[in-house]
Image (tube, rainbow, N blue to C red; front, side):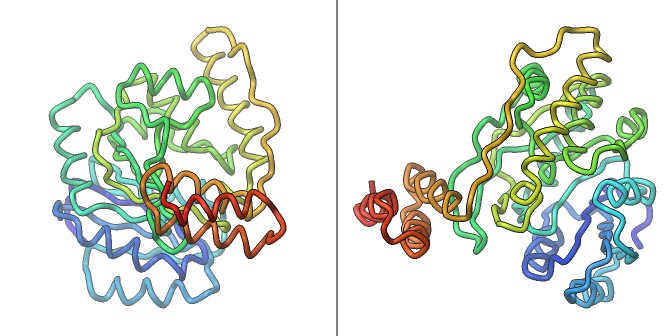
Length: 301
């Protein structure tokens, strides 16, 4: 264990064998080194625990908590209870932090004492790590971020944030009522005690894949975020948003391949666009959209 670390990194993981090594390596490779790394293994049964044990032996900054499955919200709060740092960095087991992420976020929070959270811009990557495009709608300044959160949009990426531990404890940590979108609720409550910001640099590679919560629990997420926004408006004594998002469209894997192909093409990531256009064609060889996507990807524009 590290004594009196400035930063506590909290990462829950459940059956993350495919990606967890990349995630852990990216944290341990940070240019800023004064941190402890708390990993909550939430009952994995795919061999994730064996991978994590090797890291705990090799690096004293790594602390592994292994227990039965209790869900991500309880895992996050357990990590907060164990954290010794004055700053909390979040990380997910399928993403990749750029080497200077912690260094730049620590510097920002030291220079901006009125801020309680800082995130960053993020690069979307596909399941195999190929670049898709920069994530859209990442606002940089507090007023924009807070307004977008109230509109049930997504201007802050949870595994990309660093927060003041004192502020998180002040607002009561993560709300156990929310099995999804617990970050959206936390961000809105943090915005009521301090300022939020995102750094303008891309400091996290944010993986898109079919096993993530964002893909498997779309409907429940949509309902939960409305509940969270209503609660925030009530706390603040302001009217509810004029428009409430309707039920989200449930996308098939082919739909995601289509989106990733076009987003990558527009961002100039031609190889990624071709990979997913080909996946579309394999899934739906008689679909005109598949051939159009492949033709444009092969052409490069």
